Length: 118
Image 1: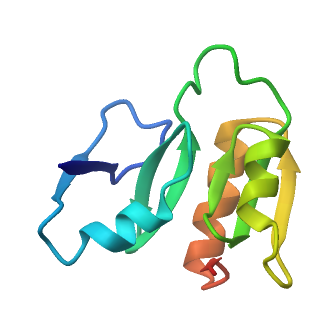
Image 2 (image 1 turned 90 degrees about the vertical axis):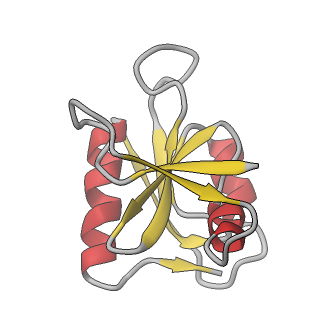
Image 3 (image 1 turned 135 degrees about the horizontal axis):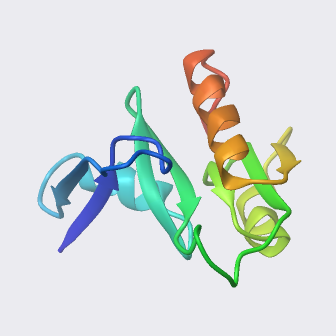
């Protein structure tokens, strides 16, 4: 089993995919960082999620940019965001109109050390 991770923003022309094999130390942290119906990305060593169907329906705004929760990233619906933050003290999220804006906020939070997977 493998987990595939994109190491560039979702808006990049070409993905930069890394495969993590289940028998490596990196597999469990990546698996724990994954949200349903999302692609996993990595920036500065931090995993974050982007909706899998970002270029077409069924995902329509608003999107939810979660920076402190069980999983982090841009999530496609309030239901996904709620699952990411339910029971997490001091959770942090922000509603955004586009996936690109949400991803920019996530990457800025990573740069500032403000992302936390609880």
